[in-house]
Image (tube, rainbow, N blue to C red; front, side):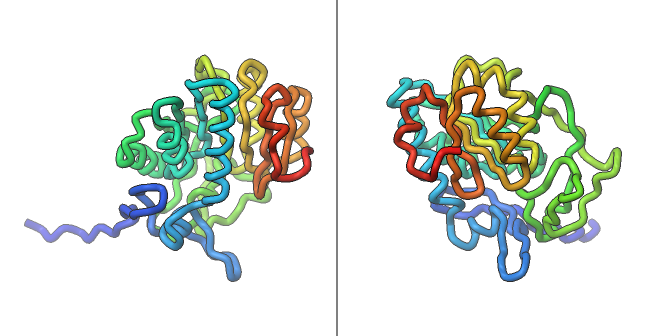
Length: 268
C-alpha cells in the first residue's frame, strides 16, 4: 500500500465560552499591528464579540416579553455559528434560529456546531441572502492559507477587502450557490434579523421589504461595507428607528416598545 499523502488540518474542535465549536485555525489576517478573524478571536480569547452577543440576547428577551413565545431569528452570514448557537441555546423552548452561510466549507462547520451544541431549535441553510432568489457564484478561498474568511466578499468591487490571500473573481471560478430573498422564505413570523454579509446588506433588505412591513423585526446590520445612507433610506420610511452600535446599525420599529429603552447611541 502506498504511503498516503499528508493531509494538513484546518478545522479543529475548540472548547469556547459559546460551547464546543469547530473553528478554522487559519481564520486570521493581520493588518499592521491588528490581527482579526472569527477563528482568531475564538482561539485567542475563547469568545467572539461577547458584548454584541449579550446585547442581542437582551433584545430577544424583550421581543419575547412584548410579543410572546415563538420568536424567530434569521442569522444572515452566520459564519461558524456563534450567534446562531448562542441565540438557539438562549431561546430553548420559546424560539428558533434560521442560519444562512454562503461559503460551503464554513457552512459545514456551522451545521456541525449546531449539532455539537444540541441546538434542535436551529437549522442551517447553505445559501446567500440577496434581493431576489436564484443563484450566485461564491468565490472559493484556500482554507489552508491564513485569511479572514468571514471577510470574504461574494462580489468584487473597487474597494474589495484583502482578506489575506488573492481571490479569483473571474467568471466560472466560483462555486454556484443558492441565493434566497428573505421574503421568499415563507415564514409566518420573524422577530430579529442579523445581516453581516460583506457589502450585500442593502440587497438583503430589499429582498426583505415585505417581511419588514409585515413582521417589523428588530435588525442588526453591519455597515462597514454598505452605504449607511442607503440603509437608513430604506428603513426610516418603514417606521424604523436606527441606532449606531459599533460596526453595525441597530434598527427597531417604532411599534416595538423596545426602541424606547435602547441606550446604545442617538437614533439616526
